[in-house]
Image 1 (cartoon, each protein chain N blue to C red):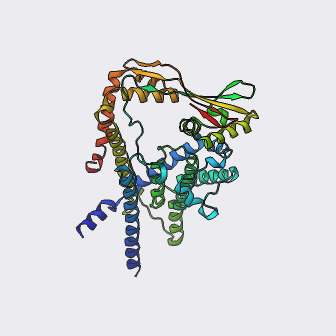
Image 2: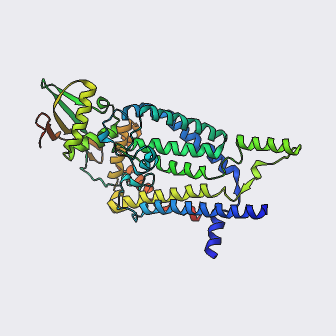
Image 3: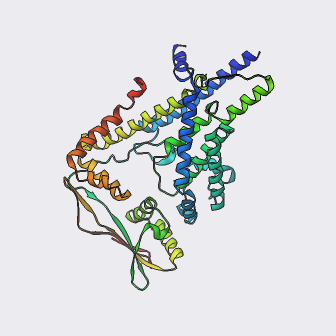
Length: 260
Length: 161
């Protein structure tokens, strides 16, 4: 019972809804910006012209397309419809209109599109945490304050009770407001630890020899046309110092969970 | 009664969310500490992935590979095959065509050849993969010797190394 009590107190302690609402707006707002900036529609138009022999759906995409076929290859029209539905859901989620439904649609739409993009033999990591965070938000009371839903319910209350009830959204709390933000913190800790473990497992202390940081700085600088990266690729001692900073940061980040 | 209903809903919500949290953390911890799959997991569990990027050590003298693909047309003209020539971005081109050429995957190579021919209405009779490396030193990168890594004759589907 002690463990249960500790668990419940840790994850479901009464916490301000405002924090969760702000995170909703920032996280969903950022992902919306990313969706619109990245020109997914042009990418879809390229991917849908590739031969189907190159299409190997990720398992999560298999699950999403299963009702229409285990290896269903969505057409450009279907992908375009999913894209715009997701964008609209995102806008609704940001302003807090039918918030949980919008968040759910936004999360599923993003997972679908990103999983489709990664079903051609190439995949990357930056979006993974965002997908999980969106799913967590969809299950939380992220629209309880700072939302059209909240304004609507207050208006309805005033209409029914014929009296105005002042409330301070900064003081409103819920036992379900803390867990999504904590979960994201835990995931960050695990992700940084994964990065540190991979480096130490593959390279040991050689990773901090300076040449490794030079190499990757130059690689990304050349690839993304970043002069700073190319410059750092020529600075051995600065690269050596930064490689120690990187490994120490990644391997100790989990301490924020113990010492917030 | 309403209070009892609220309490049981609250308990149910906590139970469901606890299982959700445990599931998420278990999957991510599983790939982080390699319980679920070997190191450097493929994306089978995406979005639960490990993060092995930039983990390979480099040393003085390490090569920074720069792969270039060239196609040979029927009239013996050589054309560079760039990602945009196949309507691909850099990573899809590299992990698709380049990696297929490196592992001699003729089926995959043929898929990209067919794509090129469909887009440009030109017939390819050969492919060549070259590496124009840069060599790492304390001062940065200097060009290294160009190497031909693979050549493929497409007419007879024969591979030469």
